[in-house]
Length: 278
Image (cartoon, rainbow, N blue to C red; front, side, top):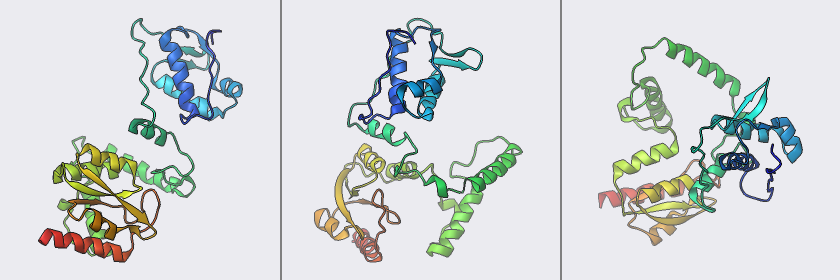
């Protein structure tokens, strides 16, 4: 590294160390402090200099390499990549306390108690890898056409069978739509319902992505407290009886992890049924 550049990290900052390292090096490259061709220390050496884990620097280097800011090779080491003049541009960092900053902090993982990330030591990684490998081999021999936008028919059939046996809900595979996760499914449902401007119950505390999705959909949010029995339905009925939507996580409330009690499930469902019929 050049003498003009000194990489400093702040261990008390909310920004992860990996992002601090990446941002500092990227800023130095964009500003010309680190010129094209300048050799960088290996990620092992830089980790020792900074007193951080090797993996922390390695991930930062991988991100810089993916952005084509540095080039690494075993023979020549790690260098700042050659870049045409005029294309360097500092990436604007999200404002402190903004939703995007919270999102970037949430995806810097895995970490202890990180929301939305399964526990690594109990995940069946070997079985999952075997099933995925089998699926890849089967897909390689299939005709390369656009997939069903509702999801794989075989998967929808299995879900329909499970709902009939385990939940007592009878439906056809054609009535099931597979989405890319909770946020994607919520967004699709909100677009179909078209409830812009209407009141919606939201658990307090709640999953940040769900809250942000409801805000973007133009709903007026009514925070409903959560206790050991789940969302407080009676409180919601007193506070906003005319709400058109209730967003709950009954099986495992996010982020508290409690289960919605049977009494409150029935209270919520009966209340919504009366409203629909009335």
